[in-house]
Image 1 (cartoon, rainbow, N blue to C red):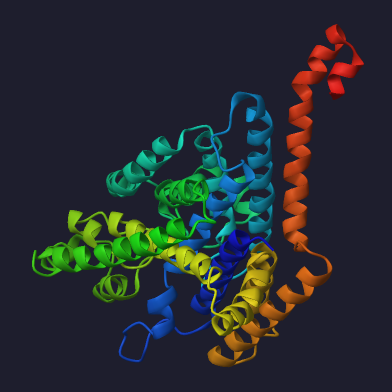
Image 2 (tube, rainbow, N blue to C red):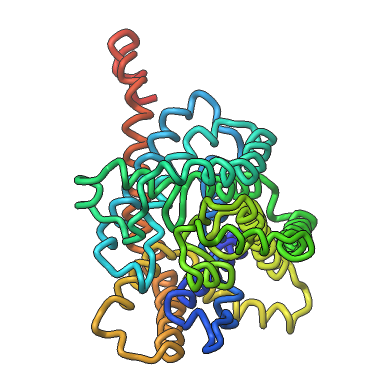
Length: 405
């Protein structure tokens, strides 16, 4: 298999196992501090999914700016993919958000937002990504007091039908994975996906730059909150905040539910998971880029022993990563079922083992995962229908042959 695809799928597999860890394992220790698993994967796993969605869209569009002849078909395919993923997400919405917030409806909105992005040159996508990273959290901070309070429940078809405006607000700005600030991840992935990922220098650049951005965001946040007094300002404003003291402390320690309170501008200096601040967006995007760079570099090792070890690790990760939609859906259903009777550690280990084995078996036999096949079929059908439509309109002048050429 193409080494580039193995590296991308392996990174996606790590993100899948990371999100399963966030949902299945304890997020905090008895003293309230984050567990090791949550400290590593909290916020980063979901962000990596979003960045790799951008990489996947770049692959789907030929790793280049989409030109006018392919515009209608490409837009149709992305919209159809968004609708299919959104439908699956809404069906999963009847599960308990406290066990696992379903990301797919938010993901669907991101695919819709990707439609105009694929027609832009790479440099402009990069500038837009930086602007969203810096500006979207500021606008969110300003808008929050005037927006409907999010339910933070998993979106359902019923909620869409009865409360469409509130759901739109939640999916784009106020929810767990708000698409407006998360557009930064999509831009990052689209830029990365247009690079020549098969080159060692590009992979090394992703690893180094991603690590620098991730560490830089953490250090900057610490400097702003501590030496610069940001934490003091946050606690001074706490009595006017909608959060209680324990909730404020939990947000600072373990992260939030997609946003931060509007009481103090110093909240934008936080980089805790799922706070959608500039430093959170930059740090998690950097971590995703670094992970992808590492997975790509590992495929380039030449030392025989190291190659065999990497192959043994990356092969099942890449197999699971090639069908994350199916395995993620199965994971959400399992943790909400009566079959999940295990303690957190045992339950997680069992899910990892099953996911890796199913990934290997499915890739060796059927190839693409079942939900992946469904979404791709819907997207391809929409692309074909919309691509043929303008030609069919000319057929009356040029003849039937022109409609199929």
